[in-house]
Amino acid sequence: MDLHFASPTDAIPRPESHQYVWVPSALVLELADGDDELIADLVAAFTADSRTRRTLMHQSLAAGQRDQLRTQAHALKGGAGQVGLTEFAGICQRIEHGALSAPLPELSARLAEMEAQLDLILPAMQRYLARM
Image (cartoon, rainbow, N blue to C red; front, side, top):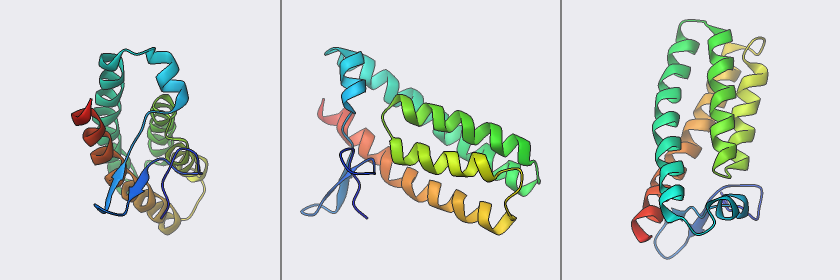
């Protein structure tokens, strides 16, 4: 899977290390205006929020609380947009739009797709911060 901001995805594969690299989007860099601490704060907020929302989304799906699933997906989509994760935001949007009516197996598959992406994105973000 090719992951990169310039493409339709959110991280860049590094073939030599088999790790993914996250770089702030042009919008994030513009808003931060050279303030690395602000970028670190945005990443920390997204990391904490995404972990909490991931858990809540699983709980909502398991309990059949479709409206709660939709609410959590919507909020996670917004957080992803704030840090420039456009493809990830799209995955969240598909969960949000299907939450009320999509068959449960389809929602479960969308949630698995979201988690797979998040499992690549969060470590890549942490590696970026470690290099700052």
